Amino acid sequence: MQLLSILMIAMFFGVLSRRVPMPELRLWFRAWVANAVSLGVAFLYWYLSPIESGAFAIGWLHAASKITFVVLLAAGARSLKRAGDATVGWSLVLGIVVCATVVASFVGGLIQFAIAQSTMMGALWLVAFRVASMRPRVPGESWLAAAFLLRAILSLVEAANAGLIAAAGIWVPQWVGDRAVSFGAVSAFLDLSAEWLVALASILAISEWTQHRLRHANDDLLKVQEDLRRIADRDPLTSLHNRRALPEHIRTAQPRGARVLFFDLNGFKGINDHFGHRVGDECLRRFAEALAESFRPSDTLFRYGGDEFLVIAPGLTQAGLDERVELLRERLAGSRPPLTFSLGAAQLEPGGVPETVLEEADRAMYAHKQALADPSQ
Image (cartoon, rainbow, N blue to C red; front, side, top):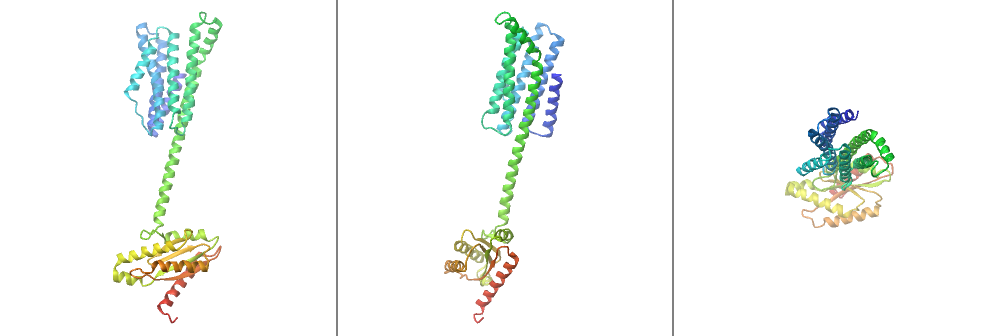
């Protein structure tokens, strides 16, 4: 039953690693295959009862497979920390060979072999626990660390239990040895339960880590979208908000109300015709800079289109408006070519209709422009 369960887990990780190409899943698939091999070897040992000359080879293969199982699980936990680093170096391979040889050297006695292997496995599970719990900690690895620690404790308990069986009637009373034999009868069930726990912890770790990466990728996507929206809402020439951004900002100002100001440069077509578009662009940039320096940080500035600019100024009084406009004229004084402007203002009342206010400010601006063109009006 234990062998069939491990084969089922190995098949599950095999299918999952093909559907979800993550290096951690590939390592854990190989780990469970190695665990199945170790149980298969143990299964054959009990039924074939090899002669002494073949016992070392079988014991070595069993120990090497079991050790490889833990090493690959730990390598998968390390891969989560190192962004997909799924390499298993030659030093680890050499370590597996040496550890398996040490364990197999006790194969002459079944109890001694059980003590050696359980002790070695307990030490390796503790190393795996250390790998899973060391910094940097990543989402989901706490499940692995807990499962590895529990498996380490169980392996060390099994080693101690095998030691009590070996020492019964010699170093400890016989009844203690009998109790240890009773515990050994259920150790296979405990092993199976602990390994199912390791499998579930691996799945939970992958699930939490995948969700973390998806959330991170989604946050990055939202940030990129916000950056693109910010770029799309900015005029590339003046760096002011463009007309596309106006509806959002005017809706923001609508509940409390604001003063809406329309600016239009006078004679700008003549500047382009006489001095060229390069100078015209420089005049637009100069006016945008003067506008930003003249108004408050809480005011929102737009290049509405062509040589038209718009300001949404919450809480700006008529006196404040006169002061800002005078400051703007002072900053434009001495510009070459000269820059003058027409201005139309309208008040957006709290809850007012933005379109109506924009039209009103636009009409006021054109009325001002006509008045400048014909002083007699």
